[in-house]
Image 1 (spheres, helix red, strand yellow):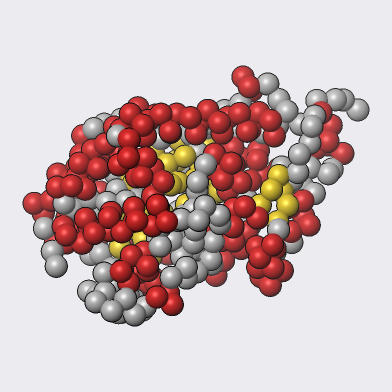
Image 2 (cartoon, rainbow, N blue to C red; image 1 turned 120 degrees about the horizontal axis):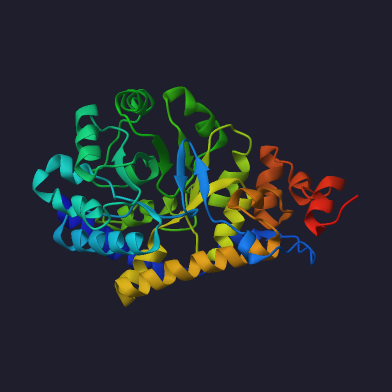
Length: 364
């Protein structure tokens, strides 16, 4: 099967998952404690976020999706237009197809052509050669580089990799050879605390935990098999909320994607320590169902609603959401107990006298 056909299959199977989703995931096991006097005035709110030497005007990004075929090139064009019109960052899909077939370069280059002043991230796998990574960065004039980890996708993939032992060394070699910040991300199965802690030593500047709850690439690749005999890998890994809780205080800036359905999930992820939050499948569904205008409207609405939530919660900036009290419920609470995460501390973050005075705007 050609690389272009595989890319088109990924889009088709991802959309089938979007339409089949039950609607619930572990973000529903995170809730804010409501403090009725915590609210601030809307003009006090900023959506700007900063991490790893990067500053974005909003803590929202269109995460890695596609490229490599005529159809996916058209999708990338529309995604880039939506990013340009709303000012959010955007990542390319895996550029491995470009390394194999340079004639598909335009399906990735369009991300920069349609979004000349935006923040654009290139995306490669952990086996990419340094010279190819540099070509990818140059092609789209990337502001940052995503290196994706996807062992649970490669395993059922009929033509997938079966050698993972060199990945860490190759990430280190790539990070040392490029002039843009390197972000390591999963593709929907999550990054554990142990993985996150290993990344700074490899030269990585940030991690996108990209947990379970959104597009399931193990399920997609199993759907491409003749017998679909890897069904037991469906829903493998940790949820995005679990990953953020697991990697708290790791010292590495965290991004969050995987199962982000609406602005409240964005606020929840920010409250759990993410500096910015990305979505892929949901935005792609909006684009394919309603066109680029519908995606621009969705992104604009999400940004407006996030600012409204910050106003209600008393968080002038996205980073201030980490001072809001959150409760952890259900299986996510069990995960935290087993992994040694102190959920009581999360529920009492605003309980100091200074925090209470600041919350109410009162003085001593």
